Every structure is written in C-alpha cells, then in structure tokens.
Amino acid sequence: MVEHIRQEISIVDFWRNAHAQNLLRGWIVRFLDDEDVIPFSRQQAVSDRILELAKHLHGKLTII
Image 1 (tube, rainbow, N blue to C red):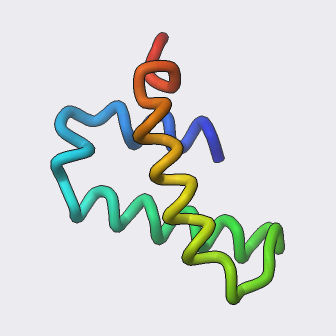
Image 2: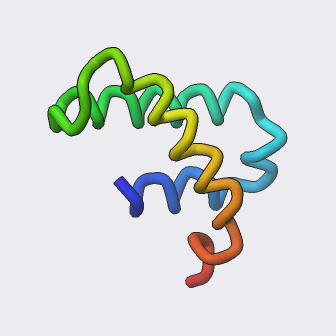
Image 3: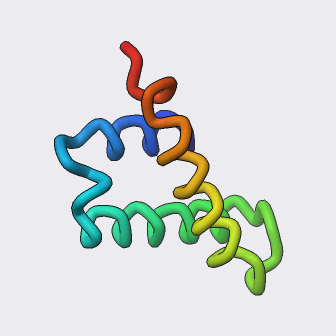
C-alpha cells in the first residue's frame, strides 16, 4: 500500500487535484476491503486518515 501511495502522490500537483485524491482514497478503501484489514464501517474514515498522513509525510514518502 505504501508503495502505491508513494507513486500516486509523486504526481505533479497531486495535492491540488481533488479527482486524483478521490481516486487514491477509493483505491485505499478497496485495498482495506480486499485485505480484510478493518471492518467495512471504518474503511472510509481510515482511508481519509491515511491520505491525511500521506500529505503530512509527503516529503519523506517521495524521497527517491
């Protein structure tokens, strides 16, 4: 999951592109569901939090 997020947020102006953010948020929800990581009722909230965390850690995640 981290590698996929890393690739997505590396796109130029990712954080200014609401559509790209929503696509990634949806991908995270599907990942959490497919891997049965957390209950379905919490998946949206957790995906939102993961995206917030990725934004906060952007500099560290995109270092090559």
